[in-house]
Length: 127
Image 1 (cartoon, one colour):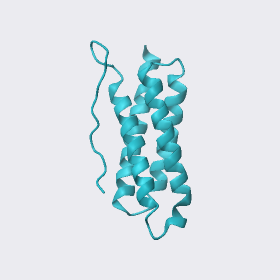
Image 2 (cartoon, helix red, strand yellow):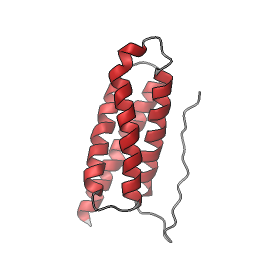
Image 3 (cartoon, one colour):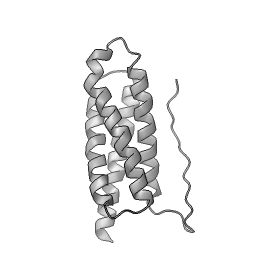
Image 4 (cartoon, helix red, strand yellow):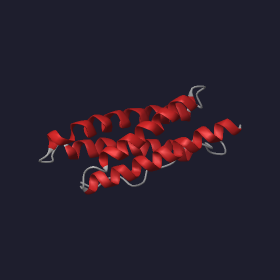
């Protein structure tokens, strides 16, 4: 099974959404976490992955939620993006405990999403 690497960036805003890179990173992370969860379910050591798999589900959900908040430029954007970054960082740490390629890819994707969410928070503080 191949993991997704690119997601299309779309926006209805005339000049594009200035936060598109965060939206894209969150959507990609949500997808990769779901795919990694499914692949972990098939591993021989599935019981050893219980905490990781719960964190994968948490990460996928918060990333999806964060993408929605950022898309509508919610007033709670900073809180959601901070939480998303924290959960993505936790998920990356969990995935790094396993040597499978899907876990390595997921860990990297989670780190990238955490970085984008932190940039989003810093950007909104400046505005």
